[in-house]
Length: 120
Image (cartoon, rainbow, N blue to C red; front, top):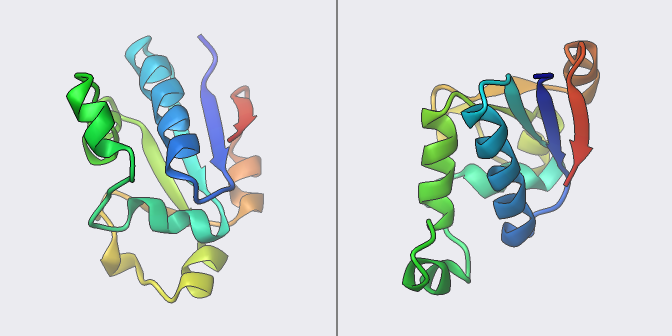
């Protein structure tokens, strides 16, 4: 199966939740899976990771945004944060999970290989 690279270009938690669903499903099937958080979207995985609809998801037996992120990490999904996004949001690499990568869009595209590219 071809790999998948998802570019998250929006700070909406529900769009990120959809990207996580797609990423975890792809990783569970054994394909290389990467999520690149562009611009202000870097804040989506800065602790504490929460979303306004988390209580409804939990009540329905679905994972919270933080739990879904944890599942993605456990399945081997690689997260890359936009270097410009860090500068834009005033955050530092130390604010994030130590397994997180940092790059720009050119590096992400250069490493695309045969991956499918999805914008979320």
